[in-house]
Image (cartoon, rainbow, N blue to C red):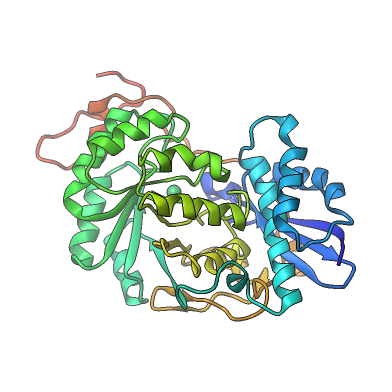
Length: 394
Ligand SMILES: [Mg+2]
């Protein structure tokens, strides 16, 4: 079997005019072969740029045998080294192609991808959904979820407190600060300490990922499991976080971590350090999610998978083989390959748009001082906080 073509499908994946989130795009990849079998993958990591990277790499892949996944991954890695360190663009491009190769192999052998990756540890993969208000948290519980993530800085402690009171002690709660570049490390520590009383499953991206010493400081100072890794690519991207035991939960993004083989290797590194894996999925479409389900089915140290409950309607239009969700879990499918296909006509209805975040006007891009930061997340505590004025130094 030989690879004959690689095609890409870029689409807009958010409601129009919805602020910063409206820039989300999904990029799907189809690798075709001379035997009529094709594989589907998904790539993130700046989808429009990654699409160009995939087109650049396509000539390398034409004529190659798609089963030799490790060899082809290394061929791509060597081919792009002149562009500098492998970041999320290179990681995304390699991911989209590599994921499709696993799909081809599974279809050709009549086996689900989880069986090629080591076999099943579990028949269903636990997922969590997102809530910022207690009413939404209650709704998710009623749908069968028993793990909920909230996020952001503003009124964070109050939101967590309200949700914890609503859902009770048995439900897993997580907080994602999304590592904004303007948040100081000391503020991230203060927020983490304020969250210690709420029995969180993890405290995610407390600081921006570029400075590893900052997250190490948070990890040393805060008594909550620390999660990070969604903005890194490859085994080298998270190596130090894992080997220095800075994080307790590693969160590779299944669309840009480098591919399923890279994620399996990251999981093995993490396992050696008693660190679990909870892949990021927030910016991803349904193909990468299903690929994550196959891989997570095989891992001893899988923790939980992010899932966008109530995502845009096009999520359910653009892929066949939708996930079967039962009581807060995705059932691991038995169909060969990834068990999915893309619907090209549906994708064509949503032309690519945006592709970078557009923060709304109330967003503060500047570094904030500790008292000001605490004013944001403790706004109804006993001591009234100073009035929040962007950019002002107290
Ligand atoms: Mg996150």
